[in-house]
Image 1 (cartoon, rainbow, N blue to C red):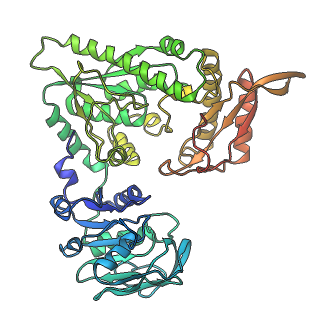
Image 2 (image 1 turned 135 degrees about the horizontal axis):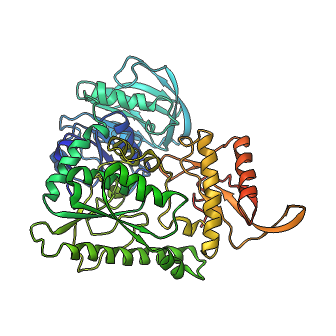
Image 3 (image 1 turned 135 degrees about the vertical axis):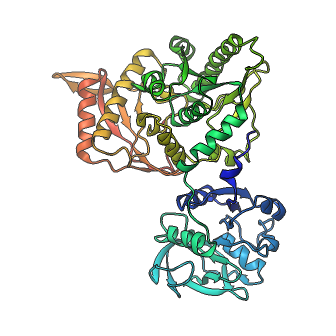
Length: 529
């Protein structure tokens, strides 16, 4: 397991996770405020938290009542450690309880958009904000009596004490969720805590730590050789570019062309990425192998397993070839494997174990025992948007940096039914048209991604050339999202949809119908499979 660079992780804002749906989002919002953040579990002891030398503490929301059996507890020692602390929702109530305030079952909960009244618009949290604002609430219990020394600075119909502040002890809290966009001034509240309450400089950005990351990688690898599996996606590309910046020709990248990428993406890796970074690239053409393995298979989960299995086998052989070509070079052996692990991966896996998994575009399994590598994970402190900033700083081509998220198995699971060369050609052509027109309309930053799906096992009647046709339908699935946990369908202008539909039905053989998926997530997933 790689450790975080000391300089980058020095004095983090710790987000203590009480089981919140939005703990990662809080961490992102802190970083948007230009302060480095890290999520830690509520089970971590106060001593362990303090050992991280935090600059401030944020207590997240959570699903529990503070009175529920087994509810996460807040050690009062954290509040007396002399650190600035900010509680949100459950964290706010846990603070109140730990400081001998009163949290009561009032029978009046508040959920969703809720008006609050700010008692002091010059306070630390609410400076520069209106006296009435809409916030996002989610609570059943309420703080009815603020702890001694706390000044009540906001209230709502269901929460007499909706915010409190103590500038002397630097303790603050709000009953709502300032991290969600539905809280109209939520980011300002958070920034006020960080800058005014905690006194932080707000000078951290992903771009300004590139050289620190490069230095860390250079120190870790030394004079050894390192390999990286490139998928064509932003994570592996940026990780490879960063390592290449650090150790140059000690890095060899492996790109497995499985034939399931979108139009132009293999060329982006083989030509644009190499030209921009100068990386040493080994290309393995495995298109026929993957098609043969997928023949006759329609079940999406089985497709995923097959693609993952074949990828690891191809990568194994490529890795053995690279290792074998450097045998006898004991001074410079192949010792390291680059993985594009991001911070959300670390958090969701409970901190990560550093096991040798190829973190490629479809999270395949581990390498065999005879291929032992130490992991290099230069992006493990960063969120996706921060990875893009780093990529731009490193000169990674924008077509790769801003590429829409793409499922690991690629087009293999965007074909409903068996994957064949002919169906891949049809889907690839339709997808290229959709992406081209969405880009031409300037929608690339509004749409998080737009899966294009071929209903390969469906034939739909149509009229083309004054005759009946039985072509395949194409589904467009444009969505907007921040984190993929939830998503809404994007309201693409009618004229853009008309261009896409007309071009696909005119230019792509065997397609006579284009449909639009207007389902949010939940209940529908982003991918169709």
